[in-house]
Length: 289
Image 1 (cartoon, rainbow, N blue to C red):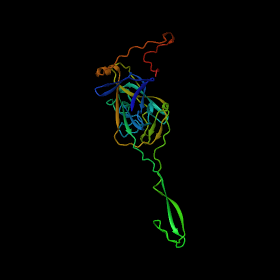
Image 2: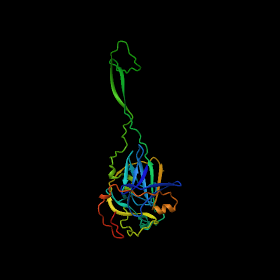
Image 3: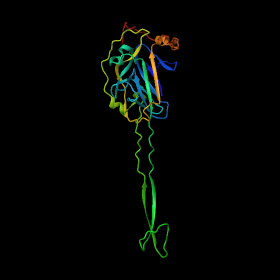
């Protein structure tokens, strides 16, 4: 499983440093989490944002609900799940304005995204129905069944046959899974729906001006479309086969932690004469999301 943080169609830069993974994030703006299943098997991904489950908003644990990602498929999680059709956008905010802080968790677990990946319990193959033809020989004269191919001299023989079935028919227990278009998100496992309680709708929305040393969290953004449906997934074990943790922060904060952040050169314009006029926004304008 590969996990990518997307903003504006661009994958945010990741760094590995001293055995940990970091994401260079801007101080504000919405983002999405993309899950890429690089295996030939279904995988369940339990997604945690700032210590909270992205499906039901509860404190995240390995036993929480998650997204089922099919073999070789990728899904994009738009935000905190609200219903089968909507989500509240993930948005970078100062940690004090994060969803976790708004629901009383404080800021101790802000600035991190986690994905716990589970394998699916193998399904037993459907049993074959084996049919046997049993032939009995009997005497018309006496009606006595003769075993072992024994024949009496002068007796007239006939035969009758019938079929019997060994073993019971087994219903294929592999669940039907409708294909999910990449733009429509993912499927939810059944545990997700039963645990869902609805998220807090009014979070702290006052965002102070961010400087480059601001510590980040994830806020509860505007409602957006995200289409999901419920399916079944039986975990092969209670423990995940893989746990991915991505700690996100602004560039200056990563530098202060010793993360070897690469400087990105300014991109030249391929068509400088065709960029068009633009009116600069006023200070504090928040309408560009």
